[in-house]
Length: 232
Image: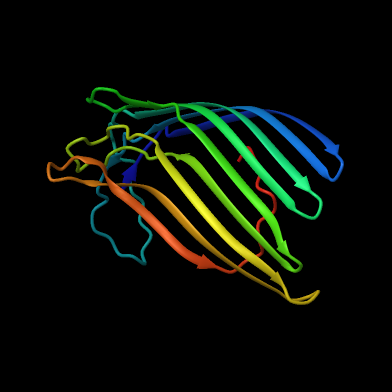
């Protein structure tokens, strides 16, 4: 039997967004600015294991509450603030283009029982861009690219750097495609994508760290994307 108590997971986030839209002849411009914050506090672990002894699976038995001593908890904290700017333009007959720029400040700290606290921080500039263009009557081309930041957790317990707070992952994605309108009710859509992120694994010294890059490439069939949101 696994027993635990005082497990807490709390997450808070907020966003302030300002937008302005104006037209200029056949063009519609959309400007965005935002400020975001995120806070995560987790208290985990400290479990106790107790055996209930042998018993029959189809027989209900009353078992007295075991006397256990729970271990200390692991504290996991994340803090992140992000400022972003975005611009989108829709041009009649040409479709639209979109740009977004973000500056984020990320910190993660882990305090595990009987171990020295570990922490890491990152402050990258992230961006995204997309375009949806009318190539000719009935054919629309689209392309998009994004740079992102993802959570990576901590090193596993069997690694030489067990419970070490791992750095956030910088990711990138590119996709492009075409939509061919054959008739009013029939559209042919095809797209290609390429997604890349760092690859974590144990090295020859049993240290859990970045050893390479994971790539996901392929093709898919779906509706072409709506104009990308500059601040996502």
